[in-house]
Structure formats: C-alpha cells, structure tokens
Image (tube, rainbow, N blue to C red; front, side, top):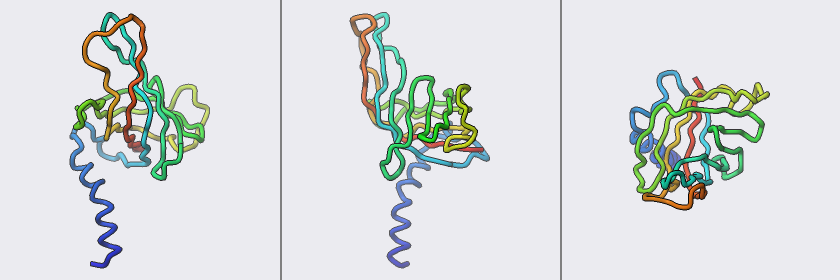
Amino acid sequence: MNLRTLLAAASLAPALAACSAMPDALHPGPGATLALTASARGVQIYECRAGQWAFVAPQAELFDSAGRAMGTHGAGPFWQAADGSRIVASVTARADAPAAGAIPWLLLAARPAPDSPVTHGLLVGVTHIQRVNTAGGSAPTGACQPQGHPLRVPYRADYHFYKS
C-alpha cells in the first residue's frame, strides 16, 4: 500500500465511523443518495412559557466543507442555499445525541418551499435531511422567568441532504 492510498483510507475513517454509529431510525431509506453536507453554526431560540423553556426556532448559517458560507437555516424549519433554492421539512425520526447537552439527531422529510420560485439549484430535489454531530443547543432544565423571555443557545450540527 502506498502513502497516497493510506492517507485516503485514513481520511475516510471518520466518515465510515459516523455512518456505522448512525441510528437505524435516521437512515433516509433505499434509493436516497447523499447529495450535500453542510455544517451549521447558530442558535436554538427558546422562550419562557408558563415557567418552562419552549422551543421557538433555529437560526443558523450553513457552511460548505471549505468553510465558505452557503446558505441559512431558520424557522419553519427551512434551509435556503445562496443560489435561492429553498426547502422546508418536518421531523420523521429522532435519536438522542451522543454528546451531553446537545440537541437530538433528526431525520426530516423535505419538500420545496411553497414560496420558492427557484426550479433549479443546490437544494432542488432534496427529499430528506439528517441533522447529526450536534453540539450544544439544548434548553436549560428547570423553571424560567419572566414569561416571554427569549433565550438563544449556541449550537453546531452537520446537515446531510439526500435526493431520491
């Protein structure tokens, strides 16, 4: 085995390990092909309601593998690429995150955003999204006050976008 082959194998090891650790419930199903991965950095927004923290919305920037900004993620939830393509999604499965204090890992069913005029672009055709490798973002435990008080909790995650 030459050095180039060894380095290539080593670079794939983390990805293969992550795939094997993926809970079965979060697999998008047969025929789904990974089209794109984006890293997100942002906040999970909570609000004090009836003395408890209630989730309101995510607010994050999306970055490609080179660290370049490539879009946004927000309430709905929606994901919008810099090219204008936009999708919305709903949760179909969840799993506890391995990291303490991290928001859950999710599988979401995606569809084009109803208000998106874009018919081509990075996110067009995406049918599923996985949220994995989460860090932070969980609401504090216990009671809160005053009513309506917002709280922005920093989080990071990887989003895998699949097409069928």
